[in-house]
Image (cartoon, rainbow, N blue to C red; front, side, top):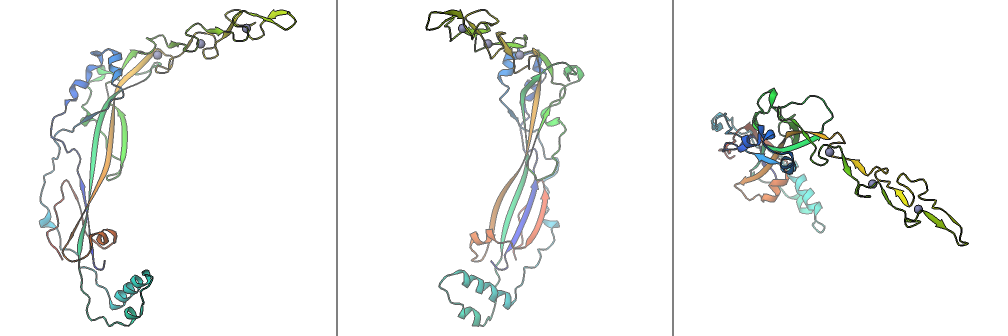
Length: 305
Ligand SMILES: [Zn+2]
Ligand SMILES: [Zn+2]
Ligand SMILES: [Zn+2]
């Protein structure tokens, strides 16, 4: 591990796509689709390939690179200390030879450890909705909706994983809620819309008879909203209907196209070596940074120490 060299290379590679994207069909289609069909695909995120990117030229910049920094040199003392540390690591090795040996020559061996970081951006569109209780709606009347890759969005930091969720401008519209058909409430599943269930204490009779034959109104259903023998449904407060979750009881929802942008750092490693340094060891050592470069494309090192 002595005198190994580390190469760190970075590349910013956004928009690595070739085809023109088929997103137009997703666009001002809000009026073309009935809401139910529209909401059927809410959960499905469509990944949109970017338009032809890479305006920056894939220029070979190896010419402009400076010379590699000189490899680190170590003294006899450092070499012996490293050897002794290695010996101490082995349970039955003696340290006598390492302490006394005369160091005649130190041979240097280098390896390149490439670390290529590729920063990618992915854009996905999907339908989304929120309850609508009034307020401004940014619909197609405000202008044409931008295509997914035309929506302005920058990562907070380059080479950091990040996810951003934005609403595509001018894609919103207000629809009647698909679950409750605009009524704002749903039939109670507990009482099937009746608002009551049969009283379990008196079996729906409304009367209670004790062991001595004395008859009285059933204690549990005597003051029920829906009459004797019936117990108020607790889930719907005896109303028979419950609040509609998708529209939050407003009866209306605001539909829009949601854009999910995912920035990701993808790291790959590669080791180039000439001598006998084991690859596994080269991977572990810190070494020294030989060069760092950032661009749309990174070319390999051409010099080898
Ligand atoms: Zn609803
Ligand atoms: Zn109920
Ligand atoms: Zn009862």
